[in-house]
Length: 309
Image 1: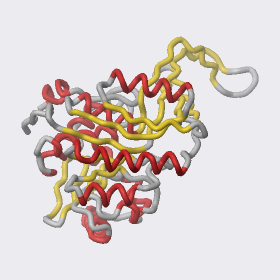
Image 2 (image 1 turned 90 degrees about the horizontal axis):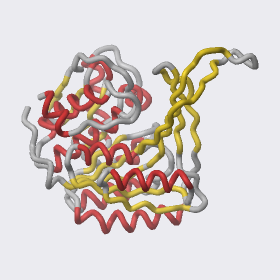
Image 3 (image 1 turned 180 degrees about the vertical axis):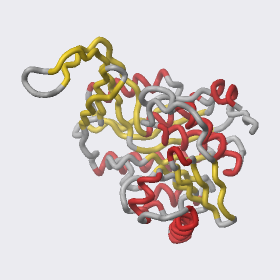
């Protein structure tokens, strides 16, 4: 594997953004009020999550990244905008006064996640239409489009986005969510994880049955390719020309949250730099093996990737 030059790779990320908050503390006793641990918080952190984490992963590799999304007119939205400025990502963030910015609050004790609390609402129709107009305008200045669907309502017009991007000759990579994959019709590549794919296609007994289900879904949705990320089994790419499997790299797994963001960001940056999918998938697999060794939503730098090749 060789690492291309990513300096001129232009990636547009669109999707559901969120703010990941971490409260770190010590656990020394059980509450007298209920059989739960008492956590004495000693440190807090904030990190961009969802599509924002995809964008910062692409930027960490050295690409020129734009992020288009919706956030609330609130303190969490301000924090998210401020964090993305530091990531060298060009951000177009539509602020909706009727929306609460999605927050995932994780309480960590003894290096283990004890609790996650989610805050979220669905964005309004008008702000999403404004985002669609910006999407059409931003298409001309990108090489690859990544649509990061976390099921929070920010990609209501995803079908139109895919059609617009494909008409402009731009590859479209989609990280899907839910059971309605028809809305992703015509995309270049879908990247479901094993659980997400099983939810849509049903279970399988062996790799041959999995391949059959994957190829049927790929053909039915008019996709160029389907990449199923399979955790400890690696990842498998299904195309009309056949199957490419990348086994998982042996490494201590610390935290898998955000690994899918790293995978699709690496794929997007590789394709934007001129690589094909057969070259991009091994690099995405390598990036995933690095990021699962880090706590929480994290990134892989170009230097880290290069050091592992």
